[in-house]
Length: 328
Image 1 (cartoon, rainbow, N blue to C red):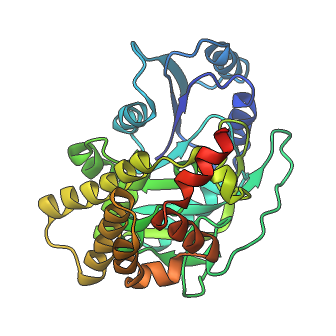
Image 2 (spheres, rainbow, N blue to C red):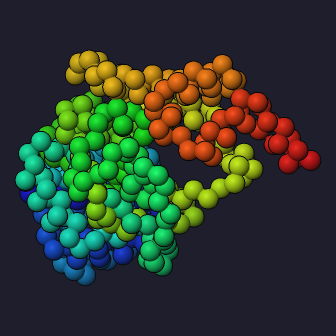
Image 3 (spheres, rainbow, N blue to C red):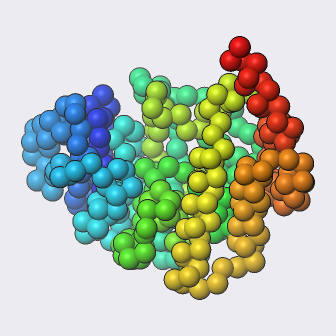
């Protein structure tokens, strides 16, 4: 059995295209469960009209009693799914017609897989493909870093996921067994998709499909994968406190997994220490904390020239000077 779970909130502009792309699948899901988080636009009406007009008896939309936020909404959705394979869906993308059939076949051919993450192709508001200049050692529209050349199907280590996630949740699918483990242990520390991947990776069951399965829409409220900012522009958006909270969430989720399931491997510990060093640097940016950070292999491999320059700017407190100058 195959389930699709979709969270919606004020998505009237694109939700019908997403629904149509699910309906166009070469292998149809057995159920589509949609939960709206209190939209104030016509999202619910559009979805219900789509369901009714196509006589989709196994599709349903309900409105949450209160606004849950996307993490709790997806956690609730996952608890409702009955499928052996569960696909997560956002409200504004467009799935390729063979997404479900391709990913289900991979699950069936590889019993170790618990979470399967597909690649994405960026599209704009008019569904036109956005060209992304590939960075060194980067895959999946520059979202997935790997010093090793990727194959079509690749196992993802827990060490990788401590540092960063590899693809948006709307491009992933999971097994019922992983869902059960998620429901028992999720504490909303990390985004639901990232935590699902970490859980799977602990059991060596997180995999990446190096082929695009969806058109991932980039618009005003969603700028993942686009990195064209100048250093001066970055100053206006940089929030060290938020960065610290995000990194602490990554370490906290890992600690939760280790406490429940047992000790993590040495490579994962090294990556965790790298994240902790990054937290220390953001809390107290200076050359001492930067030199400590630069000693990690993850820093040497992952940090591009622009990132290294940014860290030097923070260490020298030049960011405060430039920010003050811009405000004059």
